[in-house]
Image (cartoon, rainbow, N blue to C red; front, side):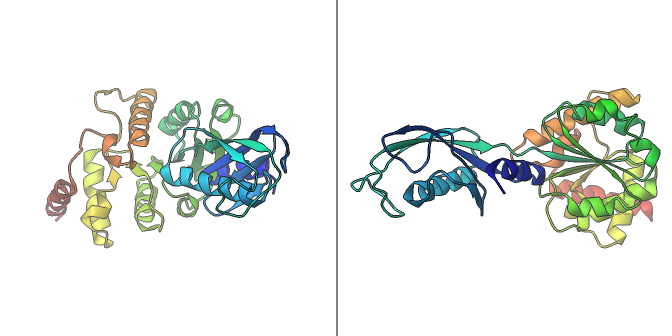
Length: 295
């Protein structure tokens, strides 16, 4: 795999990386200006010259990955026997200037249910630099003619027609955001249950619906063995407080705004979905109250 294909693969997989480019060479060096290499947490593709030069570049790139920075960095490497080197000497005699550019990871949002509200939400989100998954059990909702203005947006859009949305949930990368708004409450509930069971941690889980619907879902999820802290990971209702319109476009704007708030938070906490920003203890108290009402 060459560096360009590697960059595309990392972007598709939602994995961070660093693009290392030789931007200037003075004197003798193993590679010319323009040579590139991509470094991930555990692999590298391409080459900027091998030896100490490349090993040092890889080590520094992984330090940038660990720090989470998005700022590029320039470093100069002396290729002579007197220069300090941790990974062996290179005696080419030249100086190489490297540009290290962190590759931004596109946030992943999976929409389950592309009905009236789901379609309007997809239209808004498709204008953002994200990876957007559209999932529905109804083939007609995923017709490419219907979704033409969604597909043509900035986002990387993929379409998934499946009767079992849980299969898509299982394939989501770590930190993906999930919005559940299907046409069927039974399908919604199955997705909520599956979202709490998958191994990798999700960024946030939002469920469209009323407080009555969520009260019933909380009691049913508890009956299936989900604890209060797990259930509190799901936010319902969803949407930025203050936007009260009930038409599909207004709901979509409210949900999109809340999603942007969630994604801007350092740890992707789901509390920003609504004005209910309580602690886990408060969430437990609400769950207990819901259980009592359900009896």
